[in-house]
Amino acid sequence: MLRDSILIKLFTVVFIIFSVSVCAEENIARCDSIIFNCNLPDGSIKVCRAEKGFSIIDRNNNEETILFFDASQYEKTSYHRALVNEHRLILGRNNFEYIFSDYENEEIIEKTAQLSVSIENDKLVKNNICEKLSISRLAELDDTNENPIY
Image (cartoon, rainbow, N blue to C red):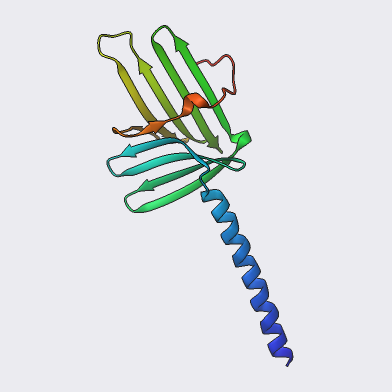
């Protein structure tokens, strides 16, 4: 009888822990709206607005990594001059950053429009140029810094 009671309590605790873990992971993976989607030859990197910040869904060769950044872990800047616009979203923590860029230049004869994602940490910088059919809605985000310097 005592053994059965202990097993029931243990099962209940394990079930509660599992349920909380699944709910937390679903909240991280939740995508309320896509802000940036970069198609790459071997996968994609997507930024979604989540309930209390941003989620990055990084798919690479059948592997998927989901990262969550709260509102204090992002920076959005814009640069404008005649015929040139650039919007950047930086999501980072602990010397690790994803930098999403939406760049347009009409100063030269042929209009240039480029979406890119850079992944930086202390030892490595990986630059990715997004393929066609990638999307950016970075211009819709408010800047966090009124006087960007870069």
